[in-house]
Length: 123
Picture 1: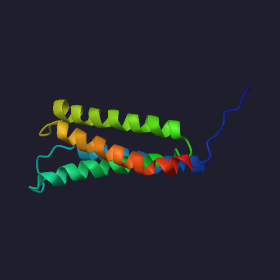
Picture 2: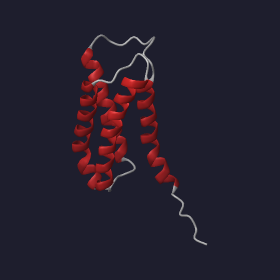
Picture 3: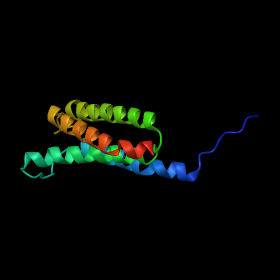
Picture 4: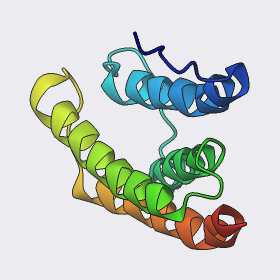
C-alpha cells in the first residue's frame, strides 16, 4: 500500500502569508461600504489597489522561490483573481461596483511587483 507524502511544516507555513492576504483582499473587496467613510482623494483608492496586488505578488514569492514557471502562472492567476473580484463587486456586492480603473491599478501593481521580484524567484 503506497504511503502518502507529507508536506513539511515549513512548506505549509510558507503558504500562510499568501492565504491570509487573499482572505484580506476578499474581505476588503466584498464588504459593503454602507458605513465606511473613505478619503475624498481618488488617487488614494488606486494606490491602495496597486499596493494590495503588489503585496499579493510579493507573498507569492515566499512559497514559490526558485520556481519561475509556477511564479509566472501565479501572476496570471493574480490577474484573473483581480478581474473576478471586480466582477463580483459589480454584480453581487451591495453598494459596491466593479471599476475598470481599479482593475488597471491592480494589474499595474501585479506587473511592477513581478518585474521587481523576478530575479528573486530565479535564485
